[in-house]
Amino acid sequence: MYLPSVMRQRRTLSSKRDLSSKIGLSQKKFSWTVEGYSFDCCYICGMKKMVTLALTLIMVLSGASWELGAQYRYNGHRCINVDDYSQYVPFAAGLGLGLVGVESKHCFTDRLLVSATSAVAVGVMVRGLKMVVDEERPDGSNFDSFPSGHTATAFVGAEIVRTEYGLGYGIAAYTIAAGTGFLRVYNGRHHVVDVLAGAGIGVLGARIGYWLLEPEKKLISKMFKKKDPDLSMSMLPFVSPLDGSAGVAFALAF
Image 1 (tube, helix red, strand yellow):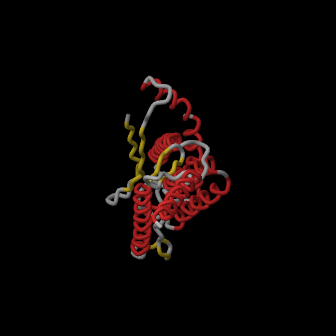
Image 2: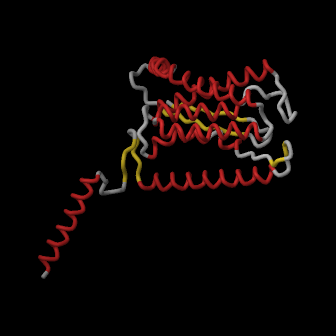
Image 3: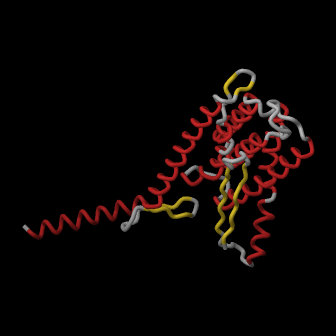
């Protein structure tokens, strides 16, 4: 009676090992690899919690912006300030879609480098033109109307999504970017020409990021005297709750 029981246990263990080897799972812990990065179950659970927290925060901020918008009206209608957050959605998608299994044209490190370069290029162009043109906003709040920085941020992310993940994802990203531009006009923050200029600057900024990708990689390789430098880079867009200013924090670890 004891021998058949042991044999059944061995067959069960053998079947589990065969199944694990077929689907590529570790016997010690659940893990898989995406774009050269290894993820285990604990990491994924933590990522899910972070994503859930981020989505919850976006919804709360969007709701708060709607309520705040009730206090501010332009041409008799309620201002919808969701554009303060939607501008970053295409940008975040350009970096994050590849990490959840969507096939991308470049690896995560390259996308991060392109995004950082594009953000800097767009920031320089937008801020420089605002200082030179000095156009008053439609709502009369200040003289930073031309061009639209929100629209530029949204469109640089949309162009990166289109380049990395194809036309389908690109259409979705461009739709969000166009919605951001529409809300900038609807809320009285920009004229139509400001939004069109911002869209063009965003697309141009993304192309600059890709044009400079290979030269930057070669420069980084020379700096660290390695053909394939082991670099760890991170970037996070931010918005100041005090004055509404926006920017991108970029860190390079080696």
